[in-house]
Image (tube, rainbow, N blue to C red; front, side, top):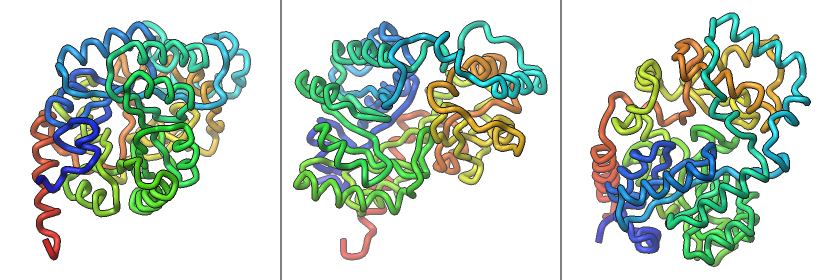
Length: 368
């Protein structure tokens, strides 16, 4: 039997216990077709886009399983109304953003940015959930929040459910929601992340989940997982698999959809070249360090607003930065595992190396 065969592999009918998160459907499909399970980050997509894109992933993967991830935080406004949010944005923050536009000579965007296409709200979340539930996606993951009604409905429809959490104190709520899988995401992770380091977090969550579910709910390790040795370590800590996002940023499939000026930044970045900032969305968010994060970290910068007010404050500017390739401000969410990426490679090659290195690491342990 393969050293990497864990119960979650059999549960989902996959070859390797490797879950790959990406915002690009070709990358998601490639991860699934390489024996893992690709998970599409759809939280910034309109419901009709989610329906179309999940259908396209299904066309690309056939009957192999794949997933979708939504961010469903508490406390969001009821309606998708930008005007309602705009009324509460302080003039100090507007002036700061205007100053960045002038300082870096940022051209106007051709349309709303990724964070301002719509307002993260109960209204949009409900419609996104409808699109996911109507699809034949196999795995439904909640990146932030795991509302029990959504989890229960997904399970009733035969979908496997998962929740990403960053603290042992979140275990009870996730189990009460009824999720099938818990992803323990450590501080090393890219994008929205918590304060506890991966090596500290994983065993604590494994133990808490075992206590709360009689060992029935598998745990995946996330945050800085970038090599086969990381996978072996995750399994040694009691996880049944791993969840990777940053690793796929520098695959040929994903890089084809990035601005050409961003790719060299990703390849050159070391693990110390990421920072955690609230300037992206209002919640803690790990990204590649750039003039963007430096400006918001300056002593005279205002404190970022809470989500979704920060989204609306900076969304159009972030869209313009990406659209026009404003190099000093150009950045990407990325975890500390970016330090292991030094060249563009196909997803299949990355997967092969992860599996072979993890197998060698496990087989090489004393006593095996």
